[in-house]
Structure formats: C-alpha cells, structure tokens
Length: 354
Image 1 (cartoon, rainbow, N blue to C red):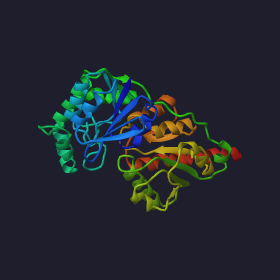
Image 2 (tube, rainbow, N blue to C red):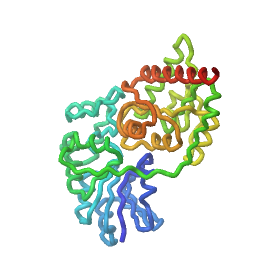
Image 3 (cartoon, rainbow, N blue to C red):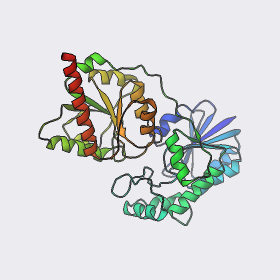
C-alpha cells in the first residue's frame, strides 16, 4: 500500500522535511512547467494533465495522501484528485501560502505586513507587487484573495488531519480559519553534537556573529544591509565581525564587512563555527517562520540565537531560553542590540582579567 506525497519540488524547508517522509512505499506528485511528475520505485513518469495522473493513481493501491504544498498546481485539480481517489488525506502547513498568495507576508514595500486580514488590502498588495497572476493560475474565477482563502478552507475542512510544525503557526492560521482543528507536530531534527568552545570564544576581543542559511528578501536582506550601513556610519566602530554560512543576496555579497564562508552541510557546520570562534547566531528573518530549521540547528549546536520577535523562531528561543529577541524589524534595532551585546562581552572580558 502506498502513501501519496503532493508537493512543489521547490527545495527549502519542505524538501528538508520530506526527507523524513519518503520510503519504499511513497509516491510523489510534483508540478512541472508543463505537466506533472509522478515519482515512485525510483522512476519518474511525466503526464501532461491531472486527469492522466488520476487515471494512473487509481490503478495503484494508495491508502493515504499527504498534501505538503500545492504551489504550481491548480487548486480545483488537486480537489478533483482528492475526490477521485477518495482516501484520507492530511495537510501539512509548511508556510503561509494558504492565506498569503505571496507566501511570506511581505507587502509591496518588502516589509512584514503584520498578517493583514482584509482580502481587499491583500489584493492591492499583490497587484502592486505584480504577483496577482498567481490568482489567475491557481484556480477558476473569481480570481480574488477571498476566493483563494475559501479554496484552502475547503481543502482544510475535508482533511483528516491538519498539522502545523509550531504553536505560533497554528495560532496564525486560526486567525484566518477559526473553526479548524490543527495539531502541532514539530519537525524531526538531526542529532548534532554541540560545538561551543567557551575558551576560544572568551579569548576573542571581538563579538563574532554568524548568519546561517540563505539570506534574501524575507530572510532579512534589507535589515542586514541597514545594519552594515549603520556600522559603516558609526563614529566609533563596533568590536563586531559578521560571518555568513549560506548564500547571500548580491547586495550583501558586495559588502566587505561580511566574511562569506559559502554554503555548508549540517555535518560540518559545527567545525566551521568553531574555527571562526562564533559567539552567537543571528536569524534575521523579518517575517514569521513556521518552524525555522536554522534556529533549531543553532540551538542544537549550543549557540545563543538573536532574532526578531516573530513566529516559530521567537517561539523556539523563548521556549528554550536560548537567546535574545528584538521587537522592531529594522537594521537600527538590530544594531542597538548587537551594540549592547558587544558591551556585555567587553565587561565579561574585563572581569576575567581582574
């Protein structure tokens, strides 16, 4: 008996989580630019229509379906597939696509929209971002944000189980869909040996801050640029060095103040952080994460975490008392907090010397 996994095949946290779901008896259904893939028994089968996919799947013994992401699909086609196969399905909330067609709650000024509820405001935001085409390709008319959310609401209500990876994600979805029943199941994490080496950190006069993961718009590109510009303008330079482990937006790569270490594997990240005598890890996302693998990886490695007071990243830091939260999602606010931490480190060093 097979389990069908529906997802966007787009990388990121969804792909990382799916590594824990795939096994010999899973079938994957993914969109292509033209058509769809079915992947099972180590083979790919390409189909041009969802009707052909359904015909193929009806000949297979499928006992359960997991809907991980519907990016690239038309929602009415997914609903038809679920009805035709008529087996129980679960929905996993990997991001906020179900309420925000732009996915990340970034408004047309590239700022966190505070989870706007008014569909008319959201509609104008999409139009200003030139992203309203997603409404057209997602399903039949009316092509509105209100219809978008109604389609997802129907998908959710017919599910056997809706699973969120954090309590904050559950509560966020309930503000849009208050009658849903949502279970919280954190994602499994790898076993990582802690890597903090206190002696090497104490000997270092400069506060060493690591930024891990890919940093683009919603992950904090603008606030890091603002932070670096503030550091450049300061009359007295901060005893602060910033190291990047992962890919950076081009505007950040141009800044010589960031020491780029390139991409990393979780198995060698501990050694990289030790080599650079990292004091703390900064997660600069300006939107609420649904789980934030990087936050959890940082804590597993034994490092304190600095982040904005948003979403699952803040929830994890608060629950584990594992760092600091900044209220305002600006580079200036981040600069002030890092300045405080630099001063605290200097006082600690002075006290050790005396």
